[in-house]
Image 1 (spheres, chains in turn green, cyan):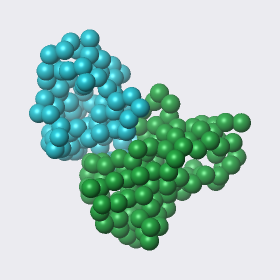
Image 2: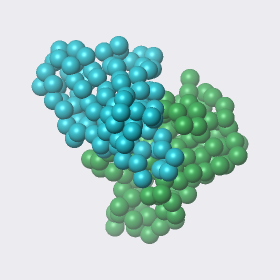
Image 3: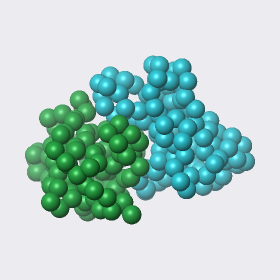
Image 4: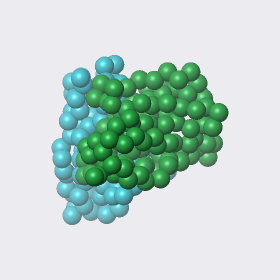
Amino acid sequence: EVQLVQSGAEVKKPGESLKISCKGSGYSFTSYWIGWVRQMPGKGLEWMGIIYPGDSDTRYSPSFQGQVTISADKSISTAYLQWSSLKASDTAMYYCVRPEGATDQFDYWGQGTLVTVSS
Amino acid sequence: SYVLTQPPSVSVAPGKTARITCGGNNIGSKSVHWYQQKPGQAPVLVIYYDSDRPSGIPERFSGSNSGNTATLTISRVEAGDEADYYCQVWDSSSLVVFGGGTKLTVL
């Protein structure tokens, strides 16, 4: 069974750094892209970017380029989303997603990681 | 960048048919996927490649895509269908684009 299990909720202060994770299981981690989706409180879904763990090829939404870093450690089947300096506006739920193919539908979603940034 | 436009809300009585639209420039030339999100839950895929249904999704859910509009149709609507629905495409410039979402209310 394919599963994406994300790290737990985080509460941080503005200016702090953060790295959240998404562990894939039940499939060949290096053979499928993994992406990240943001959902701000009460708002819709926003695409952030995607990585192919097999060769670390990474693509970012223009809206998030330079704002976050997406990475993966294939030795432990885990993808990451990180910030170097959080802002209050980064407060949101973050989902990792796995498409069936490079430009296919998102069949699998993580349970979400809630990030709260507040002074 | 490519934009997908959905109505903010759609209301329907139980047992009737709900139609949720997703508008985009020549969207008929793209593949459209639809997700259902209930409060406090992660989204779930309900339609992919315009009209295919994942296993476990009721036949009441169907999709179509032509011209500048894709449509998610839910027949014989039930109270449990009340949720937010999002359309999604892949675009060469933005990679992934989501519609703004439509809140389906079952009266």
